[in-house]
Image (cartoon, rainbow, N blue to C red; front, side, top):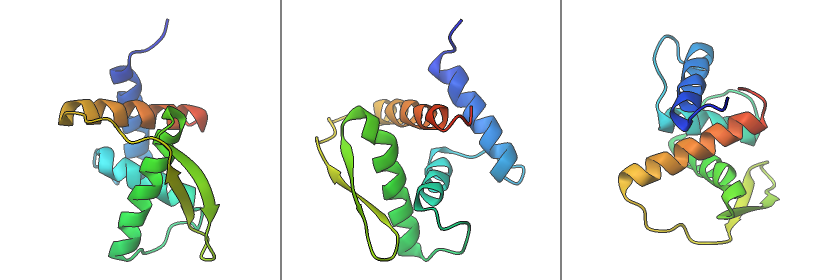
Length: 115
């Protein structure tokens, strides 16, 4: 029996919130931030505001890569991964954007064997 996207999403949120949320339920942005930190691979540390924005960008590119929207390009001298856009994202209503991101995040954590 396969689980629905909502069921898988709930599992991801519950597990990440327990592991990283200090008792708070994590939202999509917080989860993307964690993915960005993971993909950067420099461990947990304090990030500047612009670095936090870059971490979110890394995460979005990484989770949307399997959908064909982005492709890994290179790692710069500071160890930050860079992606190039392969295909423009289609116009999506806010609810559709949320569904796409949740699906992409679930796929990411499945591929990492986290869930």
